[in-house]
Length: 362
Image (cartoon, rainbow, N blue to C red; front, side, top):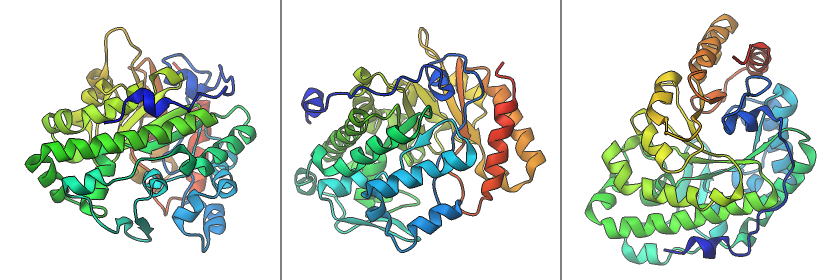
């Protein structure tokens, strides 16, 4: 395991934009914003025709390492929807590729690893991440902070458990059977793997912070496959090390997983300032689960992405309910309970943002 101080060495936090009134950042810190802040996971993606135009014939990983293209795609939903935060266009496997791991993002499948990692020797041979390897991402962040004006920029990384699942399975998995087999049969190798991946995630996030992002989100997309007991033993310590390594950066840290209703309290314990909630758990119940004495309780979410296909009346009704539930928290950032679905009509998202911005904050 690499010492956190070693990971941080050479990555000083850059002076970033001063955005004291940005609704997203105010809510993320537990304050009362001037309006209900909203952004959408996968807001820059296949639902936007302008995205499809600039990505035509450009492979995903190539796009992620093109600073000008990253800048353009990240800005598209801000221009179109008027959301309160941009999220860096990237992918959770980008730091693995930058470190030299042989994988590709296959259309219709997702990340596919050339040689799955399942033994102690393979874990020991995994490369670390040099910040130079993600300099194109840092350059994209610098371009974006110069272009976004008063809109905050969110950086992100995949959590160690989710990255490990891709590496062990060799790609996406429904049941994570190989992942759990390694976890249960060889805990020493499992923890060594997640230590290495925590190092990689931390270097990637610190590089984004040094370049000027205003907040970060740690995606543990597959953590919902774990029981709370297993999450606490096999995943939480590694996510906690990533989040603790960012504590001195002065930016809000968001932690999000899918199907993680039973894990929300533990995910908050990992060190998150904001806990993302998928659509399966009502926000007021999520607030009860994540509340921590002496610290603001801030949640993010959690409209079911499928509601966006149900017509404006249904969208507004569900949005109003979620905003009302979110008032149980000290801060609430409106979002979907997962990403925008590819066939979503983008005008529905624009109208939803307009509706949310017209609602009273309290």
